[in-house]
Structures are given as structure tokens and as C-alpha cells.
Length: 240
Figure (cartoon, rainbow, N blue to C red):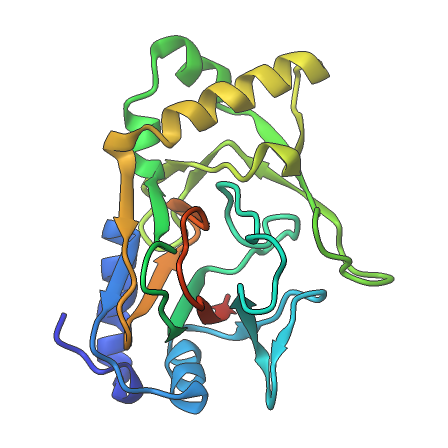
């Protein structure tokens, strides 16, 4: 798009939102921004939100650190959308590359528009009109915070109305309306396998200076931590 994330006008921010609604992911290469400018970019797209239980960036409590530095084993990452266990999940998530490894560490994105459009008739019938219960795993939101939410399996995009298949990791999809636990688990696995087939997946290999933002309404994502050589440090922010 030829834009600099540190100086988006309101009109340019709208262009980014339109591109996200259409394509799911926008990559801004060659950005020379710190956390202040990164947070300003996020704020141009919405209200920052932070997942309680994540590790905040020192001095920037609206951002969190994703890092393999000092770990005995690679981080784990399953296909998911961010913080779907609340009624109003984050609209957009962005990552800023702080340290890029010499090898590996890509982020993968699945096209949930295409996933819905290419569903077999029996699966399409199974998801239409049904809701799923999304639950928190892996972090503790703290006392009094929301831990589960109901979302339709076919969810219209809030900006355009275009429907997408709305999933998160199977471990976070506790129930599906009208199905037994076994039936729900089988359906979720089949939907995940379909959604994440290679023809519906974009792989982003990171370079220093990359800022990547995605639309949680129409993509799932996961990090590929296999075969990483070197430090992989990202700063993440989310907005609603």
C-alpha cells in the first residue's frame, strides 16, 4: 500500500481497514518504528486491548512480548483467533518484528472466507445457524473477567457483512449448539482440517522492519516455531 505506519491519516486508516476486510492480512515492510509509533498505528485502527496473563512490553502496558529468548523449548502455537472467549473479541491484531531469526519463525494465516465458500454441502449445512462456545486456555484472565463466549460458526464481517467461518483452536471450542460433545469435537476437527489446507494458507516469512496486521474476523493464524535458528522477538498489539 506504500504507507508508513507511523503517520497514517484517518482516511489512510480507513483504507487499511478496507484492505483487511477484503484480504485478511496487510504487510507493511521496511518500517522503522519503535513501540510508541507502533501503538499509535494500532490506535488509528481502534481501541487498544490487552489480554490479561500475557507478558507486557516494559513501559508499554498495551503491548505484549512474544519471544523464544531464554526458553528451554519452542513456544507452542495452534491455529486460533485472538481472545475469542469474550463477547467482543479484538478486531485487529498486529505484530512488529523486533528480532528476526536467521531461519524459520514464519506466521501462517488461513483464509476463513475461502474456508466457508469451499465447504462441502454437508459441512455447510452443519455450521449454518449454529453457535459455538469459545473458552479461555493458556492464560488466567483473573477474577471477574470473562472466560467464555458464544459465537456463530458462520459470522458476518462487521465492516462488510461478508460471511466467514469463525473458528479458534479446538481446545478453545468447548461446545457446539445442538451437538453432543463427540459430534462437536468431530465437526471442529473437520472444519479445522478444511480451513488450514495449504491452498487456503498464507505463510509470511519475517524480515527486519516488518509490521503485519490481520483481521480476526476472517483469518486464523499460528506461528511456526519449528526449526527456528536465532532469536525471534515480536511485539504484539490488539484493538477492537
